[in-house]
Image (tube, rainbow, N blue to C red; front, side, top):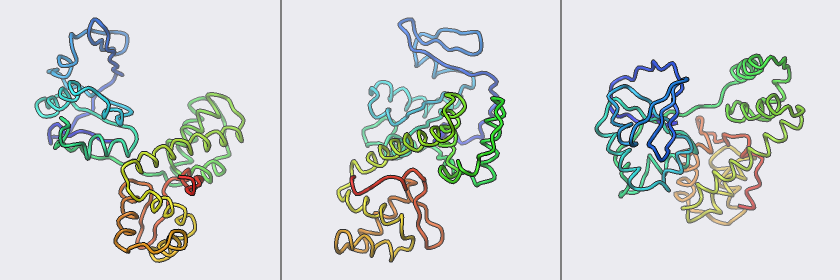
Length: 270
């Protein structure tokens, strides 16, 4: 998640209602609780004199937004400290749309604050699952099996809860569906990452070898067995890119794949 720093002052979060806005032919309707009001344009909304928080999900789609819309966002970002904007979505998409936008983008030169949601440890994962189940009146005692497969990735824990409790799938089916859906999402994310990379096969080979090795030297040896000699600098840059984009973590001198869904993917086919 990325939070734009429209100003450098501390943001006070004192909002007690959910606010949605719908773009219609009559303007933009803001809905808060049971009441609503209509403003004539997005510009009027974003020029609000009241503190307002606007959240954009799936922000990777901003790259396809009209220039006029991006112009409005860029202008508000620079001029209105009352409007605070939250962006969330694909990390690769966030990087391309916000952290490294093209030079002609209205968002260029306006770096947001980055907030990374790290995987939960086992204790927090159990607590998260328990609280979610309790809210829906479900007694659940198979935490260890879920965490073994999904680790502490909050998105996958949430998706499992949706399949198992909301959609009422059996435990095994819910877990299998979560893994299947997670693999699709992460493969799409990885392919998005690869889209502007010249040596795609190098990245795929690194990911495959990381399932078996964790040291720089061992990973490189494994990659070279698969594809021949690789320059040290080229290899190091590729490995660091994977770390920068949260596909791989580095602790001390060991590397590992962050997301359990990535471990399920056969990168020989990418």
